[in-house]
Amino acid sequence: MVVDELMSYFLNISDSIKTTFKGMALSILYFFNARKKRQKKYLTDENYHEKAGGIFTVQYPKESIPIPDNGRYQLHNEIDDCIVCDKCAKICPVDCINIEPVRSPEVFGQTSDGTPLRIHAAKFDIDMSKCCFCGLCTVVCPTECLTMTKEFDFSTSDILDHNFSFSKMNEQEIAEKKKAFNDYQQQKAKTALPAIGSSGLASKKPAIKPVFKPKMPKKK
Amino acid sequence: MISFLFYLAFLLLFVIAAVYAERKTAAFIQSRLGPMEAGPKGVLQTIADLLKMLQKEDISATAVDKFPFLIAPVIVFSAVFAGYSVLPVNAGLSGSTIESGLFLLLAIVSLDVLGILMAGWASNNKYSLYGAMRSVAQIVSYEIPLGLSVLSVVIITGTLDLQKISFLQQGNGLPDWNIVQHPLLIFSFVIFFISGLAESNRTPFDLPESESELIGGYHTEYSGFRWGIFMLSEYGMMLLLSILGAILFFGGWNSPLPNIGGLKLYELTSGMVLGTFWLLAKALVLIFVQMWLRWTLPRLRVDQLMSLSWKYLTPISLLMLFICAVWKWWLMS
Picture (cartoon, rainbow over the protein chains, first blue to last red):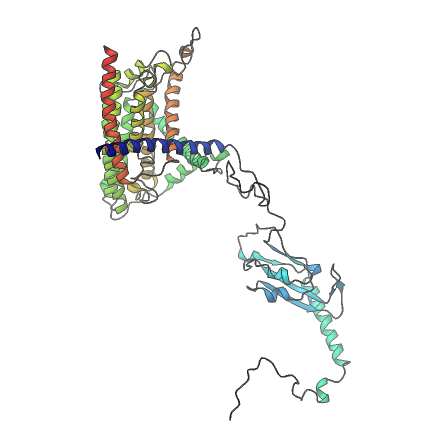
C-alpha cells in the first residue's frame, strides 16, 4: 500500500511535467504560427476543412472573406424587367415588399424575356430590415427580375435607410400615368356596351355551388 | 537610491509595454490579432487605456470600510516596490547594500498579502473577501517553497547580498552562471519559478483574482487610479520575481557570451549600459515565459493548489536544500 501511494506520488510528478511540456509546446507552436495569416478560401475549395495555421481574424471593414457569387443576401429588383404582378408581395411571409401599381391603357414595352409590360410600378419598396431572407419572392417572380445578390454589408445608422426603393418614376410621371388611365376608363365607360346586368343575367343565381360550403345536416 | 529611481521609471514603462505584450502574446497563442486599432499594430492601446483609466471616477461604495479601502492599494504597491530597493542594476550600481538583502526582499514583499486582505475585507463584498482569503492562503503557503529554493542558492553562494551573488557569477559568461556552475539549481529554479507565479497571483495560480468566477476578486470594488495601482503592483511583482530569478540563477547583469580563446567576447559585452541591458533582457525572457504559461495552463482548483504546495513543492525544496548543502560541502572539501 505504501509502495502504491509512493508510486502514484512520483507518477503524478512525471505526469504533470509531461503534460505541462506538451501544453507549452503546443501553445508556442501557435505563437510562432501567428506570423502567417490564414488563407482566404471558398467553402468549395480543396482542403477547406483542413486545419488552417496562422491568424484566424479577418479585420472586416478593411478585408473580407470572398463571398460566392450565388450568395443570397440583399434583394435586388431589375425594375425594367418587372411586370408588377405583385406575386412577390403576396408570397412574402413578413410583408416587406410594398408595391403600388398604376395600370396602363396599353402595352407600353417589353421585358428582356419578351413579356409585355402593362403596369407601371409607382412604388416598389423592399424593407430589408423586415426581410427574413427566405428567398420565396425570387422563386415566384415570373420574369426573374427579383434576385438575391451577394451584397451583404448594407448596415445603416438609420433603420429607415433599410427601405430600398426600386421604382424609377417620379411624382409627375406617376400623376401623368394615373391620369392617362383614368381618362381611358372614362372613355371606355362612355363607349361601353350596355352593362351585362341589364340583360337579367345578374339576377340569376350562380350556376356553380361553392365547393367549400360545408354540408349542413337536413332537418327532419 | 539611484537604483530605486531607475527601477521606478523602468517599472512604469515596463507596465505599459507588458500589458500590450501580454495581450499580443495571448492573441497570437489563440490565433487572433490582438489590439490593432490605436497606433500602428495597436502599440498605443495601453496608453489609450491608461488615459481612460485615469479619467475614471474614484468610486467607493457606501458599505465599504473607508480607511482600509483607501489605503490598501498603497500598501500593496509599496510592499512590492520596496522589494526593488535591494536589487542591483549593474556592476557599478547596487541597490541598498544590506547584508541580509535577499531576506529583506522576501520578507517585505510578503507584506503585500496584508494590503490584499485589507482590500478584500474593506470592500464588504463576498467575492472580494473570497479572493482575499484565497490570496492569503496561497501566498502564505507558497512563501515556504519560495524561501527554501532561494535558500539553496544562498547556501551555495554563501551570501545574502544580491550584488555579491552577481559578482560571484562574473568572469566568463554563460558557464559561470549559477545554474550552469551548479546544475542542481535547475530543480530549485523550477520550484522558485512555480512559487513565484503563485506569489504574484499569476495564472495558473490566479485564484485570488479569478476573472471568470470572482470578477477580479479583491479588486472588484476598485475603479480608476486605485485599480490601476493594483494592476501596477501585479506587474511589479512579476518583474521583481523575474529580476530576482535572473540574479539568483542566470548570472544577473553578467553577459552570457563567454570568452573564446583570444576573442574576449565577455569583456566586449560587459559594461554599465550593457550590464543593465543583460539583466533586464534576462528578466524579460522570464516574463515572456510567465505570459506563455498564462495562456497555456488552466487555473488550479483550491485543493490542487494547496496539495501542490504542501505535498510536492515543499518536500522537494527541502530535499533540494539538503542536496545543495551536501554539494556545497563536497565543493568545499
